[in-house]
Length: 116
Length: 113
Figure 1 (cartoon, helix red, strand yellow):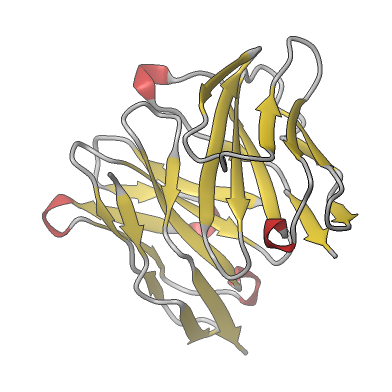
Figure 2 (cartoon, rainbow over the protein chains, first blue to last red):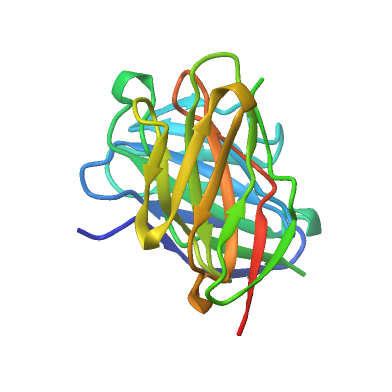
C-alpha cells in the first residue's frame, strides 16, 4: 500500500512565479491536510480538504495561496507570485476518516520550495 | 487554543544510553497526542499515539510514551538509543474537530558513538 505521494520533491522558483505542489493521499483516504515547515521551525497547519470541498483553511495566508482537492486527481497547493518568505517545506498528510472526530494523519515526504 | 511545548531544542546522548524527550501540552479536553520523527530531508513518520486507555503507549522502533494528565505531559522514552535514532522529534496534539495537528517546535536528537 503506497504511502502519501508528493511531487515534486524539490521546486525552485524565481520571485513572482507560480508554484504548484501536488499530493496524492494514501489509497482509501479521503481527507487531505497541508502543513508548512519554515526553516528551524515546527509544522504549521494550513488547510484541510475533502474531495471537492475545503473544510478548514484557517491556516492559509489570505493572499496568493489556494488549495483544491478535485473529484479526480491529486490535491494541489498553489502559490501565486511567490516571494522569498514562501521558501519552506510543504507537507501533505492524509487520513481515512474522522473516526469519532479525530484520526491519525499520515505524512508524505514533503516538497521543498526554494524561491530565488 | 491548544499548544504544544518541547522544552529541549537539542539533546545529545551516547549510543546505548537511555533517552527521554519532553512534551507539554495545553488542551481543554481529553487530548489525542502523537509523536512523529523526521529524518533529515524526509517526511514525518508516526512513532506512536495516545487516544485513550492505558497511559503508557508503545510505539515503533522501541519507543514508548507516557501520558500524565496531572502534568499535562506526554514524554517520549527509549531505554537504549541507537545511532540511527538521530533525527528530529515532534510532539503534536489534534484539535476537537480532528482536522488540525498542532506541533511543538521539535527536539533535535544527536547520538554520540
